[in-house]
Length: 497
Image (cartoon, rainbow, N blue to C red; front, side, top):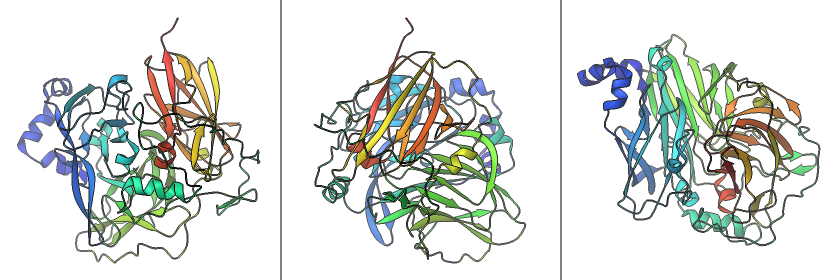
């Protein structure tokens, strides 16, 4: 993954300097569309070749946009199968949101489709909205820089996290389901394959006390939490394992903006900066009041921005991503020129704890730009359910195809309450909207702005939002095997009467 520095950007070429000096409006109006291709690529994973998918832009995997630059992209499908890309964290017109047949069909092999909308600044990403394709790494960073980013004297580093199997996604899903009762998961997406499944009310898992879970995870009220339902072959940071990590050259005493994106299919990570003290300054692309520390967690689909002030010395600082409830880890190395870089073992000496089982991290986050106060027009509880035997996951007792849409009218202030009565956590993602966390286990908070919120077992999280474009917007769990077995509904917004 290329690193981004203000100095390097401004000094790249005379053409880049000239473009940077153009008025932002003119630049946005005259810039040609960026070409992005969904394509196959080969990785070296611990000495073994792996064929995966990717999203190649002009500078490699992913896209970086500057302030005022519109999202003007021509997406070409260079795969031999149909695909569609969702711009996670952006709010495009619904027709450009990137969900199969909602309303646009998959891009056929060789087809090019154009996108044009106002880009929202922050750390975001893009990925296929077909679960088996996202599991094959059809995903990449989508970074939209702000004016403050360009003005800051700091180096930007992206850490893009994946879990990986040499088996096909279909084999992985079959193995997960066969190990938990033999149910075969559905691999399609709306409207092409997530059909009806009979008798799927698995939400009633008991009514244990919320927020009373012990510190190390794995047990909750005498019941075992299911942290990981698959052991992947490798855990990747910027397409590499810790046997051959990316080493990012940094300056002595420099400031780093570390943009971390959890693109994994089914793995929650802790980000451990070790001896490099950090401040959490944004989540899901939205600023929060700075939170000091050296270990922060993020679930699938979520992003973290960390600011790190390096000591004025020649050294190397590993930035590690620890798999929750397990010993595996991945990461990258920040190193000054000429510093000795020691090998870091890909397996730690002890298991990392469960992530935010008591929502302690989420409760500490405070939005810098909170939603304006206004009366709530509509509230709805969403019950998150499911089980390992059979392996099926539901919203309000139903899978996609049997779902009842969550409804609202455009412009209404809506509060959604995610109530998880299953024994697995669910990162819940809403398309087309930004929401604010306003309640944790019944306690009001003025929490972070997000698009993906982690809901632990036997917990409840309330989020507030203002209903946007009148359209059908997806609302789903970002754990791919959960999504593949039906854990999705829709947020159906209608025009005001």
